[in-house]
Amino acid sequence: MCATVATIVGVNEPLGIIAGNGEFPLILARAARQQGLRVVATAFEGETQPAIQSIADEFEWVRIGQLN
Image 1 (cartoon, rainbow, N blue to C red):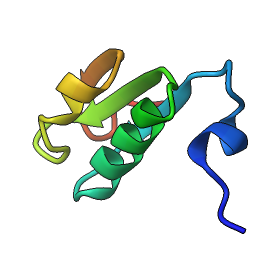
Image 2 (cartoon, rainbow, N blue to C red):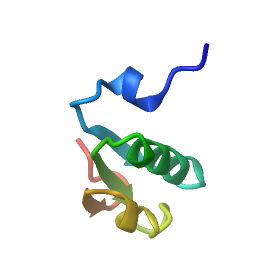
Image 3 (cartoon, rainbow, N blue to C red):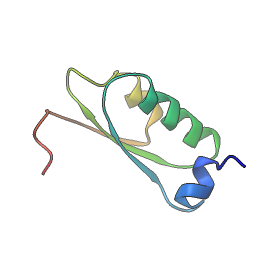
Image 4 (spheres, rainbow, N blue to C red):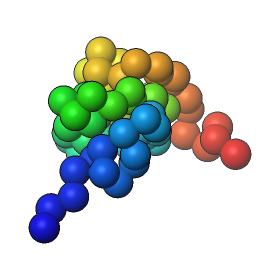
C-alpha cells in the first residue's frame, strides 16, 4: 500500500518543507497541493529552485547555516 502525503501529515495539517536542492522539494510540494494540503516552505538561497515560491502557500528564503 502506498501512503499519500495527506494520510502521513493529516488532512487538516499543513505540510512544512525545509527545501534543499534538486527536484524532490518541488515534487513533494506539488503532490501535497494536489491532495488539498497547505504547504509552508523554507528554502536556501542559492540552493533551492525558485519555483518552490509559486507552489508554497507560505514561503521564506534563508541562508545556509541560518536555521537554528
